[in-house]
Length: 205
Ligand SMILES: Cc1cc2nc3c(=O)[nH]c(=O)nc-3n(C[C@H](O)[C@H](O)[C@H](O)COP(=O)(O)O)c2cc1C
Image (cartoon, rainbow, N blue to C red; front, side):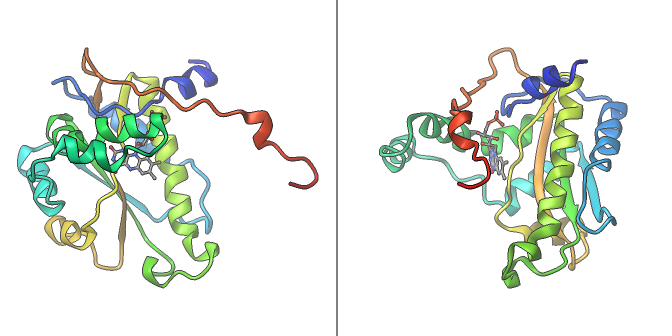
């Protein structure tokens, strides 16, 4: 597949078909993840692949996603925001639980931080987090090549998830990624058009 085609194909999808993703496709995406740049050469990244409903429910419980959502309240909350951003949140927030349950697989991406996130003082202290996200992008692009999509969910209750899944205390979770094939009626939100010419600066700002 052409490079640009893969880049264009990768989109965030929160509505999945009830169809398993072959282990080979996930393994290949993880391999490609490990080709990403990393700040210290060590690539201290781990992946937990979840397929069982039982494990998905553990995630839902840890993240308190079982609460119901008041759409009117949400609309009110975002009423002054950019139209495309508002549309994204109104679609995404109510789907956070559903996407974890319905995705055939959910991948927890774990990394080893150099400095505890709460103690970070400089951008440099966050190099581990930056590195694991380069890995995540490779992972997502590799899945997209096989028509498999994902959504990078960022958990709030990382300690609870670490405990439930036996993740060593010194490690962190970068993202939880439900992955799968796109449902027929999947919503693909419009990407905001950026005037890239205005974003480029030569020699100085
Ligand atoms: C750091 C980061 C955090 C994100 N957090 C969430 C999240 O918690 N839940 C969610 O549904 N989507 C999340 N997303 C997905 C974004 O909403 C999505 O990437 C964005 O709307 C752009 O859409 P696109 O990926 O299709 O271009 C996150 C993406 C990134 C890069």
